[in-house]
Amino acid sequence: MLKKTKIPHTYVIVFAIIVFSAVLTWVLPGGEFERHTVMVGETEREIIKSESFSYIQNQPQTWEVFSALFDGFVDKADIIAFILLIGGAFWVMNNSRAIDVGIYSFLKFTKKLEHNKVLKYLGVDNVIITLIMIMFSAFGAIFGMSEETIAFIIIFVPLAITMGYDSIVGVSMCFMAAGLGFAGALLNPFT
Image (cartoon, rainbow, N blue to C red):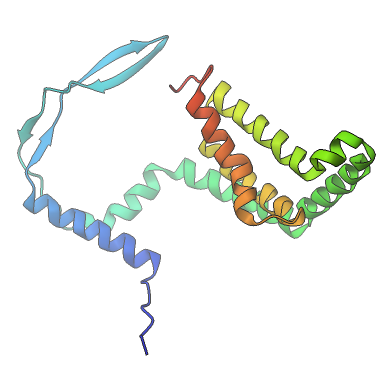
């Protein structure tokens, strides 16, 4: 019988990556590119000169390994606080069953539309999925919505499951559609 391999805890993996990176500072030579500032529209962007690579003196890391995690927390405290606040808001919405009630009310309303011959022929669920995907494709194409759609997965996965589809359909309704729109990039400021 095969033994089931146990994957180490996430913290162990992260710490191993930090230690491995510190060891590489002793082995690999240091280097850097020259940078210069260019104007893109009305925004200044710092970019590298592609042919300007030069070697610099190594700065091997030793005890900095143990403070790297905390330095990262301090450096990105605003993002961490934002994620904690958003996570708390979703926890409150989930425990109050607001999302479930909203999905149920929405589907109850859409079932009333099945008397329309066109919607009955196409399938109300198919029309809902198509409209949501068109909306998120437009978001991706017009203002570059991409990874922001992850927050909507908590709404669309239960919606897809309630309609009889699996969770992949729920993720695809927002994430894949926004990615397709982002690839088209009609007015996308990021491309």
